Length: 283
Image (cartoon, rainbow, N blue to C red):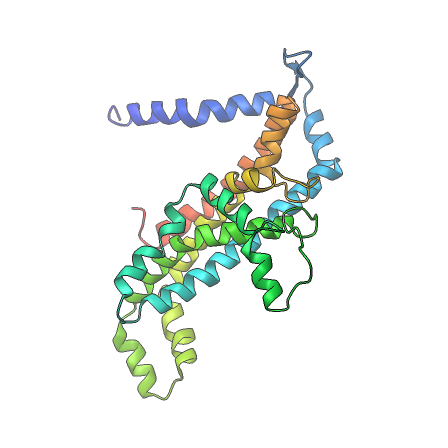
């Protein structure tokens, strides 16, 4: 028991105390003019869930998370299957595919902001050349496209981690099983669906849960590329908390939004830990 005391103390100082402090702050009201917290009970929560803007941000967070996680899954799985093949330069390609993942989020955001520039960016030039768009649409400046434009950058930056996880899981499925399925007349898609995917299922579930937690809590790309605008069209919970706390200087409301975020992330984290335990990652 004495051996557990130091890590438990550290956990309490670094995790439990800040969460309790934010929980208390969410029950208060303060402003730039009146910085002393005033206890208001659950008023902040009632105002938050009655605020159309906050509900729009929650919907944005849901759409953002689903779009990015699905895109990372598709790109990561495709990359894993391709990288599992033996061809000249495959080792170099495996190294290069990780570059977006190790790139700092601010750098990636600035790069994609330039790529999606309506006049100078190559994205519009490419799409115009293919006849898919006319003119110079401002992907980051339109309410209908800003969130998805940032999601493209997030999917590009995050898919290498999924690809590495799925590649390891793909190679962990015995080749004898796939070969036996081929000998029984199964087509490549049937082999992948009925043999490979079931063998990769534990890794897929863990990776999806992990990327969901990271995506829901992401901040840097949105802040660099749109700052949540125009309006709140690309605002997600993390950026909304930042703006409420440090721009509007409303720490009570920001703490309330933070507790909502903590609650959602706790649910996902519990699922993640349960899945890790089932797959043997935790003993």
